[in-house]
Length: 334
Image (cartoon, rainbow, N blue to C red; front, side, top):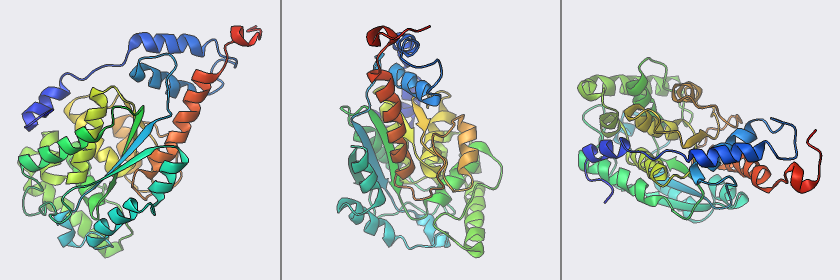
């Protein structure tokens, strides 16, 4: 078992592996010799060198991406915070299994392995306005599910989610981790009354759990959800394997933020795939210090924005690892 208690998770966060500085230097040197003007590929060059550092080679690869979707249900939906009933989570998991969702098509388009993990959908977390969302055993179980879901044969990783009510959960977590108001958005499309209910539920959750919210892992336990904990565990598992991660939208970034707040630098192996149409996502990315690769107005979840960004990373790596150097091509470097 990688960890059995939250104290074990804290201990793991204290000994995170770093990127390979030798590989970074070698990739930078290679980049300077490729048949292009310096900096001509813009951020693609930075992405390729970042990949090199985590993969430990001056010629990184991006041909075996993994997407893992985690699904969970939330007790806070009893507060009327979503435009859809909780049964939709189960129905969408079935749609993933049958290949009918957007993420299935994107995974195919970019050659990604897609895994779906349903986390006790018949047993929602507790309503965080009345008590902690999860016990320590429950949050550890979900963290471990994510940690163990990372395929060590992959060369990059995306964590996606499905869970009716989880924009409320993510907004509550962001408010607890960073303070301030305005984290709640319209999620699946709630009206003004629904948005007011979301804001009221978040305020109630923050007030109830105020005593423990200075601990990011307790934020996850008291306000989070199983799929959010699993995403955090998967991002941590990828870090321990030195595997690059592409972050998805607001909910995935709320999960990631727990790790960053618990241990600054915990997300150095992560890049932001996109900025979504969920209003607070851009604000959360700023808190994380991540500049998104794409801005397409997406708000679907499922890992869809990060899945699209796989193509950008693949393009960056293809150019870096496949291009000829000036010497190889017989081109004068000037």
